Length: 351
Image (cartoon, rainbow, N blue to C red; front, side):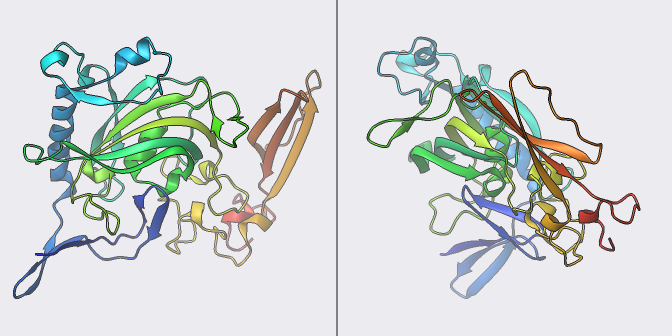
């Protein structure tokens, strides 16, 4: 018997950390190959799958703990990685994860009105800043799926990991991973490079996120993956740094292309061409690239000097401080409105 899954939606669908695909309009289907051919079966209702996912994750959280004692009193050789184990035997008195996690409600990106309880754990807060959802982050991580047939095999199964720092565009990963990473903080310090070329970080965030199937791969696991359909995922991570994302390189950071302000990058499409603005180099479809319909400026000033001022049509998008030169650099964008119709040029198809 062969199983397969196809998912088509008029939106960006995350496949895994590092890859996404813009798909067209069809439906979600799964299929089983029987002796007499293929039988197509609709994927399970996403709303009905929510309580199933929640129960599986909460059962795990209630019966497992993490190495919190090592984080409280780190041994000399501690690597600051989260490790899980079952509450049983010598570990019967451990504090369950359920008593140490937090959660937030996260919307489904496919079915409007469906929400998930996304549990996350903060083992170390980190001394830096919290990434925004369209940022590019540098981290190490391990990804596992929860095996509901654990009585016959491993309860969790490792399917992906990075033991040396890698960078991910958060708009290109499964939604639950994106929503979990933005609960943590980065290191406040730059990377430390060793003579052998390796890098290390200090005071970074360490955490975990427990992802319901609907915020993971659902019925579209990566090709060749060992991840089954409807799998709940667990990611542990060490978050080192982040930088502002501009996925279409049009000069406007993606965080400012969320025009409806709902903290989702996928559903803003000014010219209705099927490409969301954060992935569209010509947001209004007028043939002029967005980068030519805005004005990007840079201001540099030293400690003690007054900060620059600018008109209301210009907004600050990023600032950086160099402790060695004591210089602050501010990056701004001005949004011209040539025909004075109240719609800025890069969103105005007849400007």
